[in-house]
Length: 263
Image 1: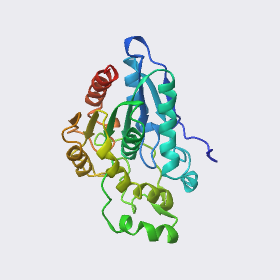
Image 2: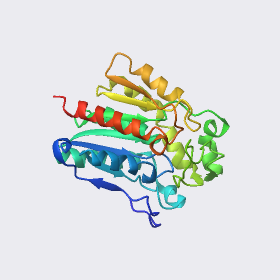
Image 3: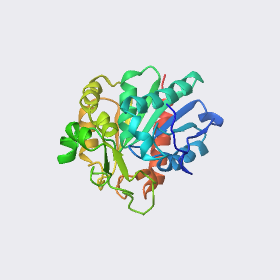
Image 4: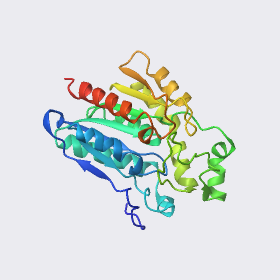
């Protein structure tokens, strides 16, 4: 699927082939709903500097103009992560999937479907529970009445970053695109029962966009398996651009090195 509008400066996908002893480990990084690689590229660059092979992906319809999202659905976004996974695995890499917000949810979904290719998953402030609020509950009806709604009205907090900054996310939300994601949440939660790969659950207690209850629920679902909790105490939702960035890089690098060398 091709976009009609040009990619915003800084929202381009980005990659690095890796170097040294860690070049055999690949990391796919995925941004969230209405976001773009502005939020994930700094993390990708930091991991690449440590030698990991990195793919920072841009989901279809994102990072251009919100009108490009009108024709996209959850299946298009999941396909893009699956493509990046297949590419790295095809180059002989042990692959770790890292996702912010909805990107973390997609990473979990793909890992459940293709465990033979995934060494581990790192969801960061991921969405897992049904969203609260009237608009979310009424989404199946409203998508036919209001094709586009302001991001704030949809419950999306723009630039939820404790240190300040701008992720350049869309101001408007195509309702059908958003609802296509919400519809998948029950299936994804059910699929987690079969998830066998190691997981590093990173979350911000002060998240104003996706409540921390989502990540805590994920930890509860994965009890008894190879799961690690990482609390990001000084960050808001966009932790990849916030005060705990260095902590996030260190922990993800350590996790990727551990699971990437498991037999």
